[in-house]
Length: 387
Image 1 (cartoon, one colour):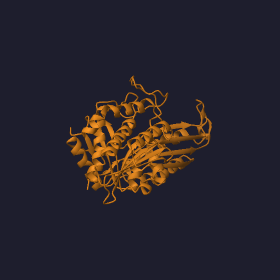
Image 2 (tube, one colour):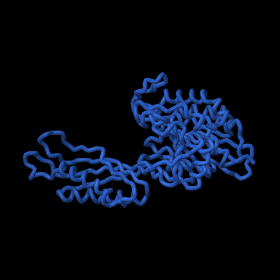
Image 3 (cartoon, helix red, strand yellow):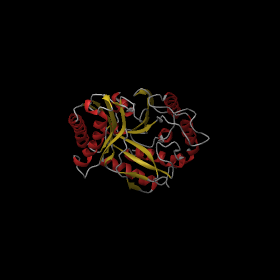
Image 4 (spheres, rainbow, N blue to C red):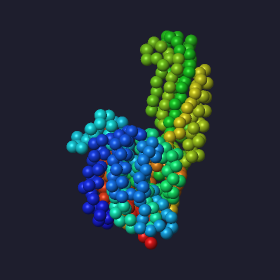
């Protein structure tokens, strides 16, 4: 596999960084140790500028090429945060933090972009500027949005932006990508039902919220099957149900239903949001009760720009020999906020036969480190070839 020789030489060093991050996971915006180490290393590498505090705990490094005849600027993003879960790998370098684990490979993503930053700082064999972006709070905290709101793109003049994610089950070192929608918008909903509580032996004297919520759960499933174009992909999943009473002889006054919505287009997203409220109110009214639906937008659809997808695939072929067609999936990724600001692409890299993402036995495969580093470096050198 034609990885860059210098990055192959750095394999063990970068692996050490990765395993240190793995041992010391940090959640959401609390990436103080990780951010500090990233900034320290970027300064050691000789980056032309290192800025902290972008998006609260984000870090940005600026690396200028030997020349800059066209003013080109490419952004490379890595996510730094871990998940609030207990690790069960038994590794020598397993998490030392109770209730926190790098179960999605962000430790590997951070290490790979750091490796690429060191290589690019040493060689500077490109015409333009590379901006390395280390983002907190990808796991539900909208860290990418926070960095963009802090002026990331304009402040550093970023014109295109690229990111990578490892994928368990895909062969080690195999790349895959697709143009257009890749990952879904990930939203949340909550519906609060109000009835009239009373004695379970006298249901005729009540407005029964348990019957109401049972009917509502079934009715919500008809939104996708009967309102969404069947050629499109969408998911409405009820994941949480509770009532205001746990007693066996009480009909509860109120009930709550919560869940997630996943879509691949803004039109479908808007349709489901509208129908979810309408269905909730209609079902509640049928039984004499009332409903209040709250729809919370999470991350938007991850949409790869066609031209930049081609560039990313070419770099992958150069490094790994091939690049497959990635399937559309219903998971979400907050890199989508950056792709709304600038054209770019999100590519995936095979982690091999490992436990799945967000699993307590998952571990990032260190074998793919020089491959991923080489792809990030290749993106810069191919998009901004030396003058």
